[in-house]
Length: 83
Image (cartoon, rainbow, N blue to C red; front, side, top):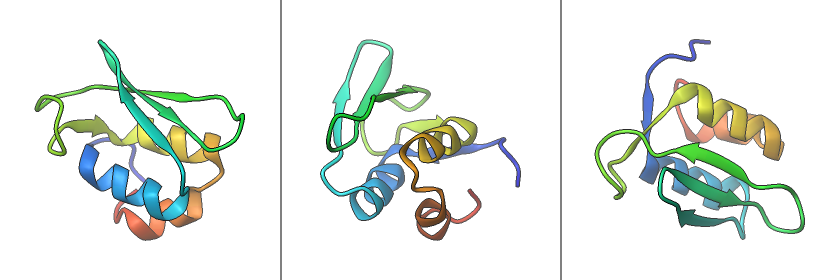
């Protein structure tokens, strides 16, 4: 699968709500801070283009890395076509 391209922040957030309930998002100065439930380490997604809302774009490769770190790769592939 290709790692090029972007995904919208709103789509990523919906996938995380379904695949990893209890996950929290915080907007930092240069990146999104994504905290999984429990005491697992957070993941930092670069902010990317289109501002701060649900239309913000994140590189597909970063989302794949986050899914691997949180152990939700299979669920993410179902929720985000083309991942």
